[in-house]
Amino acid sequence: MDDIQQKIKESRVVAVVSVNDASDAVELAKALVDGGVSAVEMTLRTPNAFDCISAVAEKVPDLYLGVGTVLTTWQVAEAKRRGAKYAVSPGCNVKIVDAAREVELPFAPGIMTPSDIEQALEHGCKLMKFFPAESAGGMKHLKNMAAPYKHLGISFLPLGGLNLDNMSSYLSSPLVAAIGGSWIASGDLIAAKNWDGIRMNAAAAMAKVSASA
Image 1 (cartoon, rainbow, N blue to C red):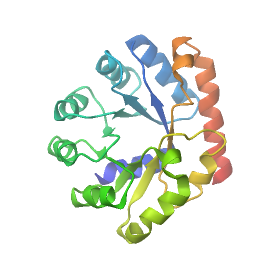
Image 2 (spheres, rainbow, N blue to C red; image 1 turned 180 degrees about the horizontal axis):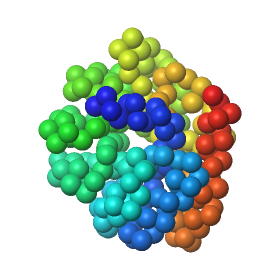
Image 3 (cartoon, one colour; image 1 turned 45 degrees about the vertical axis):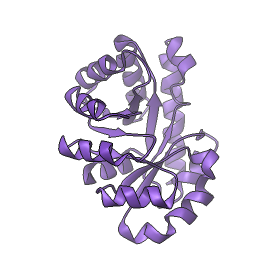
């Protein structure tokens, strides 16, 4: 579980994508890497998501490949089998967290309340997905919620409502390991196979990271 915290901190930006074609997934992954993004969350929201994950694991090994929207213990095992290096979920289902530990798949559960944080901590998680970040109150909510737990070495991956304009306000906080966003590779860009647009968005996000350092 410590591995995911360090790797996500190094990445600073996680592109959140939903893709249904394996060849598109590979081109998308290459565009992200070319733009400087080193981590991705490939969501399980499409029928062929696992085939896309397998293709990226094989063809783009330099990308820190994560699986998102993990909701069942079967999905945990399949994510590991398909080559995922970590996984995340929108909520904090401790059965899923424990299943990930059993197969040695680094995992970040979703949290939005102090009770969620305490459940995650009890099951060995130090990195947590703060979701949905903006509608839950953004950095103000995260700072207040995390205050009683900061001494425990936890960090957060905010997702939901983040974009190029507000990402710096999150990255400036020591609570935030990295930010996640779907704007980098939106559904429209993927559908249009606009790999250059995705590459440009990735580069713009990483430029914001450099400016925030």
